[in-house]
Image (cartoon, rainbow, N blue to C red; front, side, top):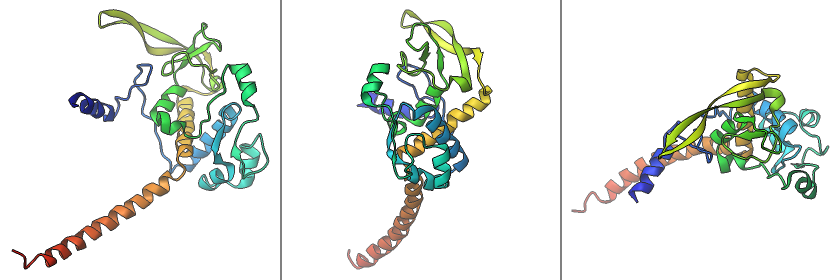
Length: 244
């Protein structure tokens, strides 16, 4: 039981989140109140993710309302498979086509941010590297043997890992200590990091669109409970004043 509690405490410490691939995850700069970031993230998602991955629990008009965009802006910039703004974010590719081309149907991304976490996604988008042994020529540090291409390579470019041999538990292994740029992308490193943050920010919003409203109401509920506690305590003292 003690080991379990210690594990929970370590996992809760900031900066110590570890991915399945043994890579320390970077902290994602999430701000669900930054509408500009969410709008940029939505555009990246529509342009680079929605061609293969669906988001069937999100409707275009709901997204437009939350991100302070007009229906016309959404139609012109984010909708490529339908012209009905009330539709969910589905893809034109069928499951059979996906299995033929990729070996399996790409998963729906509606709630991936809740399943994996923002830090995982932010690090994942930034740790693709060249690996000629993989079918699409790339691999990923936090998702070893990933089965998809680096769809953002035009923005980031391509890079190869810098490996260092370390001895752990008596065994020598190679770990990634950095990356070397092989092909330049259309963005600088800082610009791409911001794009990855915007995309992660949008996916966090998409996984729970009501989150900001829930958190706002939560403060009101806590305030009400605090005031109620004072009155309840005073009433309790009044009832029990003459009881010895």
